[in-house]
Image (cartoon, rainbow, N blue to C red; front, side, top):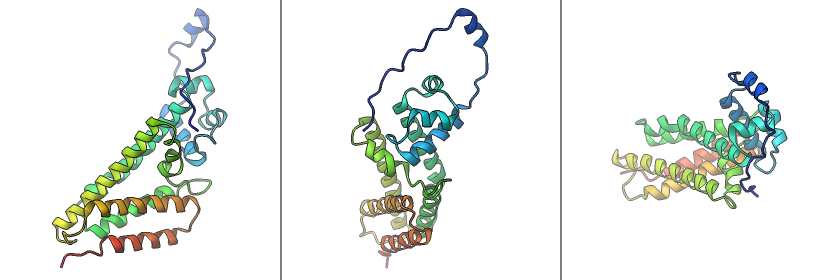
Length: 221
């Protein structure tokens, strides 16, 4: 269960002399790098399975520094999830925008997704949304909003791909772009879950190929 947001514990006040000595001292860490380390940990172990000690060890920051940079554990989790979504969006945006035949576009999207889901030093980490954020969404309205927003973004992007394919005559206009988009998104979620369960890449690619065959099977005559 997601922990309720708590006010960070007050830290001991330093005296004026020590404050002057610390003033202007550069940070001993890079926030962007630390956030990436936290993201990797949350993505692998989930919210409940990741302790503050784990986060401190992974980022090289003590608890007061973590609080100062990112807030409490829940805030750091949300920031990590937002970072994951931003990175995935940046990686895929060009594929969705480029003018490509629908089959080639889908193959590239799923190929990139598999690359993301199968990455990880200790084994495939799958998808942050499906593997951990969806569980936290049951209890946390803010996380639920982010998850639903992510689902909607994928659905709209896929629907746009199918509508363009219809306009170019690649698909018959009798198909429903929204239904195809939901099927395309469902395939994304399926391969994410199976990747985390260490299903071999060849089997995942076979699932993708079969799904694409179904989605582009309604060709214009």
